[in-house]
Length: 387
Image 1 (cartoon, rainbow, N blue to C red):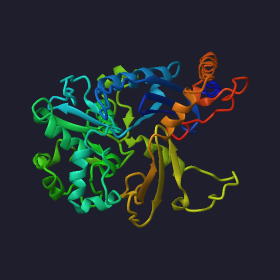
Image 2: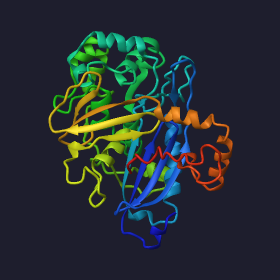
Image 3: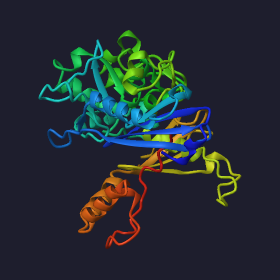
């Protein structure tokens, strides 16, 4: 806990960030001062090459642990809002909201296809061969990491144990907001960026029919989202009593429509107040800024008043991050993971890890001092996350 707690502010806010390998929670006050931070690892499975899976129940349990930790010692009735961001992984539930398996083993506890999963290579090639008009909004070529190819893979490979029983396909950020509120509304952020939804036109029936997923159109797209909200919009009447008990919070707290994790970081960078810091972007419009969000991968994000179409660059996405602006994204895969690999392979890494543990620091915070070779290593890969 930080010294800011000595003078109790009138309002608190909780942000929960679900990354590839862990869940983080932060408690901030109305001035944006960070008061508490907690982190909890989450499980990952790789049953075969290019298959990466997680458990939505394990992720939710981790969310509950870190939230309880950051609100210890404060008056929880002063918490005014709760928000989630997460990786754009695919969560599969049945009609009663129970987990369904996304694997040949039939293990329903593993009901999440991770964002970095590449099992649907064949499916994404066929989707791209259609040259459907929605592809112009993903740089002309859909990524295997988006949701449409993963959905098609499930239909073609796990029809009986998964596809035919499925009632709800969630982006992970939207699963978390549903878990907190019971509201199945989806965030415009996830649907526009990963599901081919248009903020201006909605779903395109012809796309889903062309790729063989016409059954998703049934019941007004109820399985993938027919109530869509801007990021940050209030969901229902707030935190349900059940979710409140699990998170250690009072019920009824406002819960915001979610964001993809990189986009939460992008919003924080694009909207940062830079006055008085001598930066070249001071006094310039937000459209002049480029956000570089560093995590397992790196994502470069910029916004514009008018749509910009660039082959190979995702977008333009309308109102997906900043309302009224078009978003474009580029980046490099696994850059953060490669840095981890380099640091963890260094002979001095065990010493760094021991010193970080002794000082209650993450190894990415770095240790100034006498650790040979990597003593000055202090890349803060979590600093781009916005709470």
